[in-house]
Image (cartoon, rainbow, N blue to C red; front, side, top):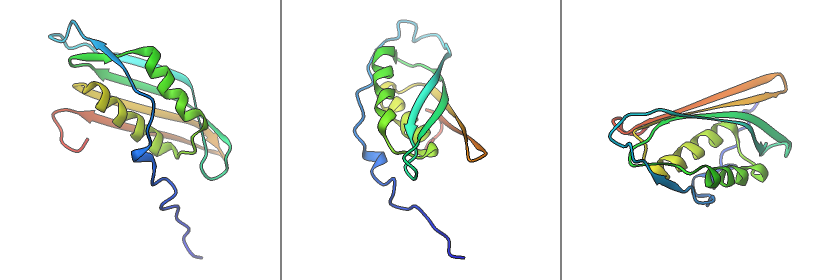
Length: 134
């Protein structure tokens, strides 16, 4: 039986222009604080079936000079609602866009996607300024 791959199907994701994630000054940048956000109603579209996918995203980050501004982050996440995207690409794209917007000291983004066809997917992306290629 021949293997079927979906190469090329998500080729545009890395260059997909998403809404701007805004920030505000971290006036305690001399302190190491951890911020945890839970996004319990994240939705996107399965690129293969066109059906909706639902997930809980949990973002944990240690800010540097700036913090995520929540309203713009909510608007950013809404852009995924009608986007056909694989679970792995959701977590990678969101993490990369956050890093680009706020340059945190570290970040972990976990996506727990609801079961589809009897399989529940959890994808985790970690980033640390001290590690290259995170």
